[in-house]
Length: 147
Image 1: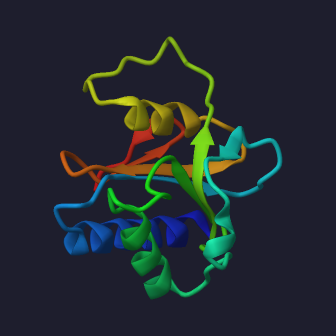
Image 2: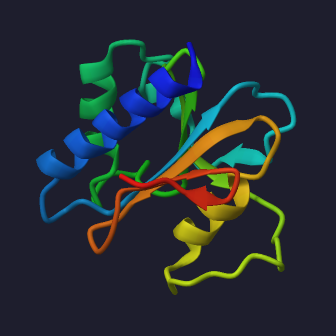
């Protein structure tokens, strides 16, 4: 799948999650990757209760809404989407290197900065964040894309 098509699907996904989220929405961090090798992630939880990968777009939306609820044990961390646009991993700690030369204009929290820094990694196509207070924001190689 081409990056343009992936970006279009990612924007649609974030828009749908945002429009369908409720007061229990905790926020969302996404990594769209081209290759899983050497991604600095480790799962927070055992993913076996959710069948992965998820290929159907509407099921991805529903799954992300379900697990982004503050009462769901999988709400924390970043969720991974492959370049084929399949949800492959949920609830992962994403340990990115800090890039000190980047000027951060907006003072958001850890998820925002992690997505920004993580977007520079060679195997990452895009990162995205959505909060109950801001977003959606999509990063590509350190640049916030206009939405």
